[in-house]
Length: 398
Image (cartoon, rainbow, N blue to C red; front, side):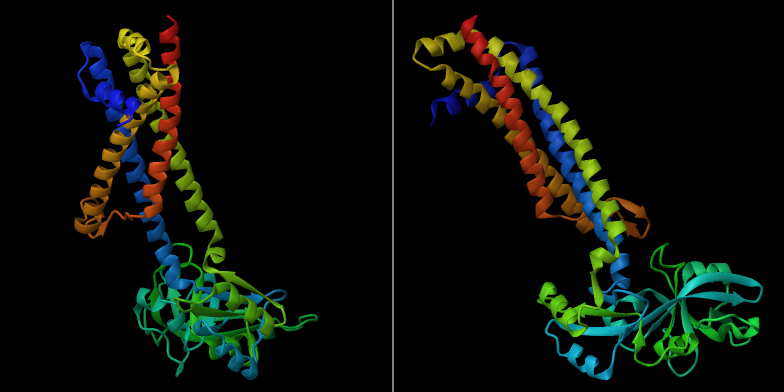
């Protein structure tokens, strides 16, 4: 066993004759324990909230979305459809149409986007799991609306006596001579209500794609986007490259993260802010380690001179207290991290903390969070121990 490590262990675990130093050492160890414990708990909590928040978006957003680079629509011919289906890595895709519409029900009105989707849309996204009622059929004009739109208009489900009216301006140019001919309008039955999140619940009215094309005066090969579901082993970049080649680089391809860039940025910013705050708390706790080591140096001044007389070099003496500080950080931080991991595991298994009677507080156990805590404790502990151990040089000179 190396000489500095042996002496450092003796100093750390043996009881000092000065009771104040024992108390300071215990407080320092508890501070490191609490810092590591709280840092991992908070990081796991934010990872859980991130996963919980994105789960709602993942029900709606595809893995990839092909949109026009310019204009509002893309042409997707039958030949292109066949070539698209043969791209490796694509398990399914859906052609969609989006356009802003005016909704009218009795005397109540609202704005929304009509989203016409084909029969494969439910295989690309998981939106049907969030629908009360039934998904629309192609046999009659039916739509699925958001929960917030439903609260505004209150059209009910399958109310054939009072239909929801969709109104859009007719495409074209020139002066309008008859306002009655300036708009397309159709009446529909609400077959279902989806509930995903506050942003989407107020945005979309889903219909079959034929109905949307008819309302918007679009031909059968014209669409707003193509939404894609990838296989688990798909090479995303390779798939994007093949799609761009098929469309002669006339389209843009956005990933799920790019479709939710505001949400991702917000979650990442919050996570970073909380990490920095709790790192600051950990830094304050490590000042106790610095103080504890300096107190031990002052208490062991005679021992230090004895070690020097026995042949110990100033570097070895400095390493004794540096090692003691690192042992304190490693043991305190390790135990704190272990307790935090156990607590997070218990929360995941037994739902110890509940947000509502049916919704447990979301937490996630991630290797990246464990490594973050270890690196943070290690780097800050290294700096604190080095800073405190430097005081041993002055003890030799006095």
